[in-house]
Length: 412
Image 1 (spheres, rainbow, N blue to C red):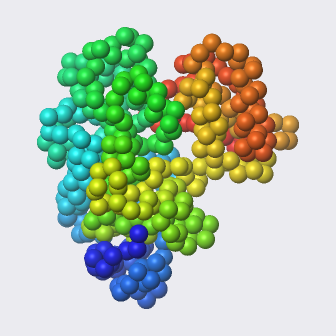
Image 2 (image 1 turned 60 degrees about the vertical axis):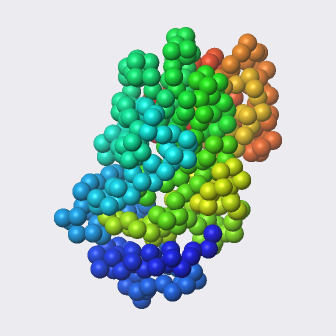
Image 3 (image 1 turned 90 degrees about the horizontal axis):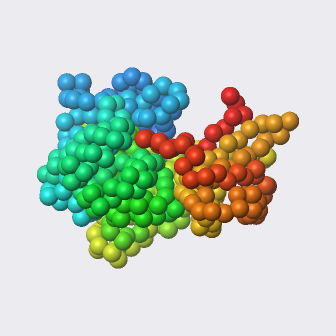
């Protein structure tokens, strides 16, 4: 997607604001002698911004609008380094709600729905984003926040919630509990809006089988408003995103060069109208591609990105081999005997790296035989044999937030 003249005009407005604020990116633009961009070529020469830049700006170094116009801050959910603080103006908050309401509308959710919101509230953008979009749509919010599964299920029954908003991990936990308690006939859920973590086809099928609901992927990150900047349409491939609020390009993560539509690479986002903390060419480290053409399912003109396939920083280096969790997921999909849950543990024993893969079985099988078959397939995919262990369904931990799939014990 080549940046349009209308989008360039909006970028120039953000460039002017950044230079006036003299924050890290404004200084970077001054040093480069950039006051505006006149063409797509000019835009693609602008420097990238990174999460490290945002951390270095802690606490309020990203603030671009006057402080009296800032009505809220949010912080990224990362656990390493300084937190990233993102200031929002009242317009930013409203713009975010508009985008989120669009997501609900694309999913076929209306003001007659009752939306149960389980992601966290507070500095994290999730819960409050789901709620703001719900209220902008005019639907009924049931804002429980995370945890307390007994109460979640009771309210789901009593309030007859029709939409569940959750991480995929918590949606699976709730689905398993509802199935275990034999309550599915009392549950009125029709749709699930799932975000915050990448999830595979096996987990999607497991949630769908247990709850019988239509599931939607929602995309977003705290640095760029929060969840709600994109969602898939019913039956649609990939996720529509709102190109009147953000511009997305795909780059080669190694060279930084732009890639043509259809090729896989790293998502880079520019906010077009954000006031509190606009970002230009922000490297997300999420891996996807732009899907060319108009959506054949819904006909919407909004462009699409494919499902997130992972992150550039998900990569594990084991025995000199680069391994991504998505590669392991692709292998596990070949085995209908296992559930969607898995865990990878990496250790350094006797002078060498060791990778152990734990998977759950969903039936009565020979655990040892299945472990051997999985290990053999993984070896053919990544080049070395892991230690594979099959366990009973329910043994691996479930999470009310995000599930930690990879545990690297080499540096403990």
